[in-house]
Amino acid sequence: MGKSLKIGDEVLVISGALKGTKAKIVKVDRGAHEAMLEGVKTVERHMKRTQFNPKGGKKTIHLGIDLSNLKLVKAADYVKPAVKKVDKKADKAEKKAEKKAEKEAKKAKKGAK
Image (cartoon, rainbow, N blue to C red; front, side):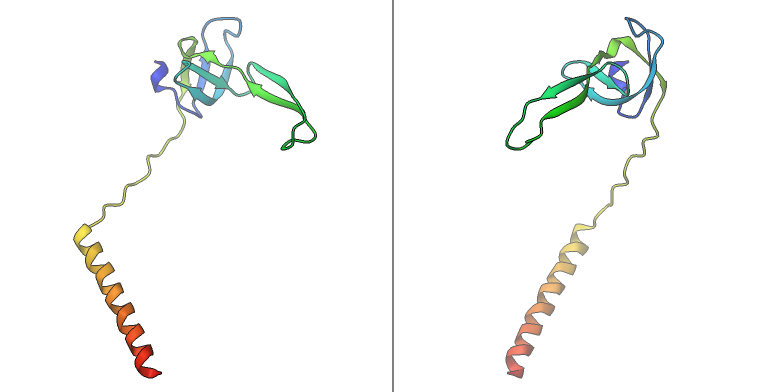
């Protein structure tokens, strides 16, 4: 079940301390077999002052929940982007014609001078 979960899906936690919690998936870490849920299991990390972050401060991060503890409630509306088919021969001919037109334009400029 965990392989089919994607960002934006609404899930239900089916086991563990957070059992019964509904939330949206913010991030999926397939390597660690975990998903990060919106507003669930968040902690604040204190950031040290650095050259790139001179103020330092706090940063809220999500801790993961194992994918086996999640059940899909509602899938996200995901539309696969349309792939434009390209006719390679027509594309090459078009590029050739453009190059030829550029060369003729350069010759015309040289002749006009």
